[in-house]
Image (cartoon, rainbow, N blue to C red; front, side, top):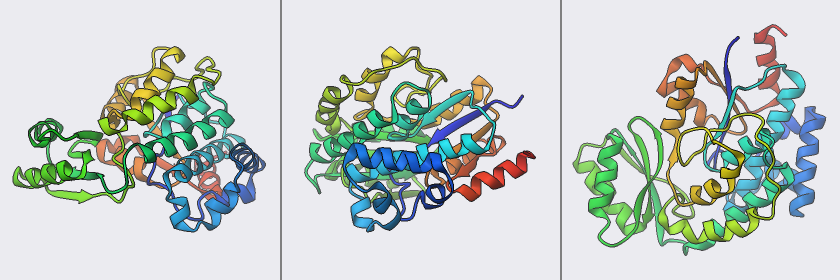
Amino acid sequence: MTEWAFVFPGQGAQAVGMGRSLFENSASAREVFEEASDTLKLDMKKMCFEGPEEILRLTENTQPAILTVSIAAYRTFCERVDLHPAYLAGHSLGEYAALVVAGVFSFRDAVFAVQQRGRFMQEAVPVGVGAMTAVLGLPSDKVVEICENASEGEVVDPANFNSPGQVVISGHRRAVERVSAMAKEEGAKKVIPLSVSAPFHSALMQPAGERLREVLRRFEVRKMKIPVIANVTGEPYSSEHDVIPMLIKQVSSPVYWEQTMETMRKLGVERVIELGPGKVLSGLFKRFDKSFAPVSMQTYEDIIKFRELLGE
């Protein structure tokens, strides 16, 4: 028996038109879109299918939209393919999708939480004060060392340990620029500024985490049916009782995605399915270890093609 893991994308995976083929071909997907629209009092279908892009790109819209498409993809997949994951994980926002699939949160609670999370993260730092940059081609410990040396009293933190040689940094704009310059001097292959609206996963996000606490504490936290690997540790949650404290911490802590992939390998995961918009996580898994042979399930057609490949 092959051990499968299901993974769910984070912010940046969004694209106008996402989820349309799922909605058009699956009753389960339509129910997810309707539940999101009803919970948030907005037309999720219109926002995902028509945009415009500048509306979809607003963090408080992006986060619930990606979560909606991810859960629509998961439920459509379950309708059409008899395959069950041994482990779950999601990148940043995607961890909420993993927790919904694990049965910890209802979709209704999660989609409300991530809308508020997006709003709080956006409001934590004035636009233009923060920045994020991807540093490629340097060891993780070297990037951490440069952040410490370049802070000069400002905040600059590793935000995502995405894969070997790919670390995203986040914090005050000037400090991020100093780290970028030093990283180039140290031999980084590329330093790529990211088009984001706030310095996510840095210490500047702590006020957002405190506001999120008040939202999450109102929700019912149910027993975890499938193990979920947490962003803030790169290891499986030991208990559903850790979920809310970890999600609060996650807002201002690094995403340990490289460690998550290593943990999956150690746990015996052989194949990976990415459910939701984009192929970012599939790309990271391929670069980390080709034997995971990740597949991306963005559309209804992807799911039917996969089912045919399985011989169902």
